[in-house]
Each structure stands twice: as C-alpha cells, then as structure tokens.
Image (cartoon, rainbow, N blue to C red; front, side, top):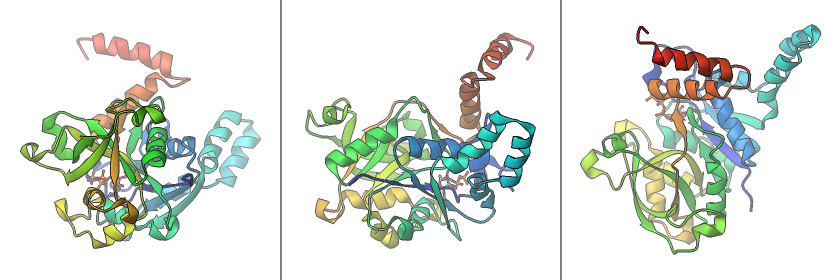
Length: 307
Ligand code: UTP
C-alpha cells in the first residue's frame, strides 16, 4: 500500500530562538521569503504525500492561517493585476490537503506524534519536523519511502556528525543489511543500515556510532501504542527516539524493525540560529529574483576586511 499521509510536528516552544519566537512560531520564520514550514509541506507533497497533518499548539494558529485561503488579499492582488504575488499567496493552500491537530501541552516530539493517531489510523506514515529543512536537490524522503516499501517496518534518517555534536541528537547503533538490497531502490550498499538501538542525546562516550537521527521518519503505526507506553525521557519529554528504539526490539509481525537511510546531503535546523542563517544565505543565493545580486553582494561582503 502506498503512503499518503505526512505528519509535521510544529508545537514546540522554540526556546533556542527567543525572543524572535516569543509570539511568532519558529516554523513561520522566513527563509528568504517563504516560511520554513512551507518548504517542509512542499517536500512532503513532492514525495507524493498529499495528506498533511500539522501538529500545532498554543500561539501557533498563524501556521493554519498560512495554509488557508485569503480571499480578501487575493481579491486585492487580482484587482492590482499583481499575478506573481497572487500566485505566491495561493500556493500554500494548494500544496496539499492540510489538517491540524493541537498538542495542548508540548510534552515532547513523541507525544506530538502521538497526537496524530486519530488522523493517521492504522497506516504507515511519514514524519517531517516543521523546522528541519532538507535541500530540494537531495530527495531523501523518496528514498526512505522506497526503503519502507522494500523492507517494511519503520525508516529513520542517519546523518554522520562529529562525535562532539552527537549529544544534540539521537544516536543510532547500526548493522549492515544483506548486500544487493539497497541497490534495488537505487541506493548504494552501505547507505541503508539496520538500526538495532537508539539513545536520545547521549554523552559523547555513550554514543552508539557517529550516526545522528535527524528530522525525517517513515513510521509503522505500531509506534502509536509504543508512544502511549513511553515514559518521559531526556529533558522530561516523551521522546520519539525512545519510542522508535522500542520498535527495534519488536518482531516484524508486530510492526517492529527499523532501518536507516544514510543522508550526507544539505540539511538545516532552522530552529537553531546559526543553521537558520546558513539556510537563508544558501537559499538566497539560489533565489530566482535575488540570487545573482545577493551572491555578488555576499562575495564583496566576505572580502571586505572592514565589515
Ligand atoms: P525541537 O526540539 O527542535 O523543538 O523539536 P522545540 O522544543 O520547539 O525546540 P527548542 O529547543 O525549545 O528551541 C523538533 C520539532 O518538533 C516539534 C517542534 O515544533 C519542532 O518542529 N515539537 C517538539 C512538537 O511539536 N511538540 C513538542 O512537544 C516538542
């Protein structure tokens, strides 16, 4: 059965980006002229996932507004003959069928995913973090969906990171899979691994490998029962990593089994100030209207010792 549903958790408090995120959801911070979460919804739609559930919460209503129609604004732009901006304001509502559910109390990413249970039902589904951008030139989600179709169970993303940074992520203990399987979905042997264990935010000496789990997942619906049994973990939050870790120990006929797709592409955590700035610069350099001028200015700026 093909997957059709994506869940985008966007109910976190965004404390790393305060004060900007005091009244504005971090997922709506613009990366050039498009809010971060719109890139994420576009990525889901490009991978064929046209049913998108955004998990929102207190102070996050503007996210639903962004993906709604705006008849008054559209009438105004149409009357002015401003076709380009009219198209730009229509796109968010046309990308996918957008639904929302509220996470009344942001008790962690695992809890946020649990809030999607009624909408998702008993189907496998994708999770894309609402502040985590994957460059559109790196079609990660499609590869993950293909791996899920080939191997069943759940699929996570494994990004190699320097050992001193692993404590910011979940760390994965991995084992090779049979040679010849990954090439069946267009990936190299070694780019699909079996995940045997996961630890959220380990100390460097506890890390299971240099593979960090980042914000794209394809999950078996068995994860919902597991989340309900998952106690608060690191930071007192119900961690998605802990729930997926429990899936590694379940037999396949009960929804267990986890594989990881190795990702070495471009990814930005827009909830982190430095990564956010990198994302803005990278996308500004590629922007159809601004790219050439911005790149010229940036070259001069970098070379200007007096800056
Ligand atoms: P983060 O850990 O980056 O979000 O979660 P946060 O808690 O908002 O971050 P800081 O540390 O306070 O800055 C990754 C994604 O999961 C969502 C966030 O909105 C983000 O898109 N999330 C996190 C939820 O939806 N609910 C939660 O309880 C926690």
